[in-house]
Structure formats: C-alpha cells, structure tokens
Image 1 (spheres, helix red, strand yellow):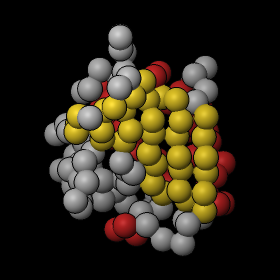
Image 2: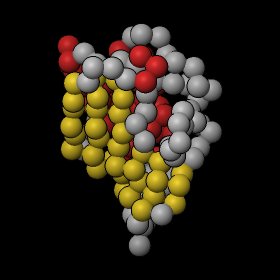
Image 3: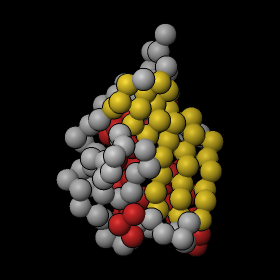
Image 4: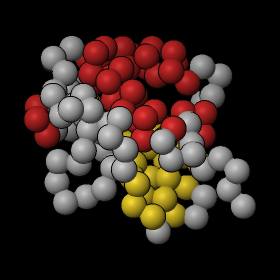
Length: 127
C-alpha cells in the first residue's frame, strides 16, 4: 500500500491521505471544492463540481493515472435538484468514457460543501 499526495490538490483536512494506491488501483479520499491552497469555492454547483474534478484529475495525473482510468465515481449531493447539472459536467469531463457511479443525497458535508466526490481509478501500465 502506498499513500499518495500532490500539492496540485488541497491537502487532507483530517487524519487521512489524499489517495492510496493498492495493486493497480488508486482510491481517492472524498474531494470537496477546495482550491489547492485550501480555499473553498463559492456556493455555485457548477464551479464546485469543476473544482472537484480538477482536484481529482491532479491527484490521478500526479500518480500515473488519469480521468480516463476512472472505474467508479461516488457523488454525494446536499441537494438532488443539482443532479442534472452535475451530470452535464460529468459528461463533459469524461466524454465517451463511462465509469460506473453512485449518487447519494446527504444532509450536509464538511465546510458546507454542496457536493463531494471520490473515485477508484486504474494505474497506467500496471503489471
């Protein structure tokens, strides 16, 4: 097991790692809409969703993976009315790549985030 970290995404805000690599897989911790410097993005679902995907992309790309290697994505929304907007942005980000997904409504998230996401992704050229 290898604990992963990049300064191109926000540092963990608790006693956990940004991601862990086990075998040929990377598991990210839940990402909220923090900038790499730790500032929360304004309360706008589109901006928060895009920031989270930027964080996930940075973690993966700094660790021999990519958005195209994502196998599973979990999304936690504080308002299911935002589901359609998140879907549109997810389709833009992933294009023809269609990872499996779970989406769950939650009462609240850290720092009053509107959503949180984590992914499981493959590692390129894993043997």
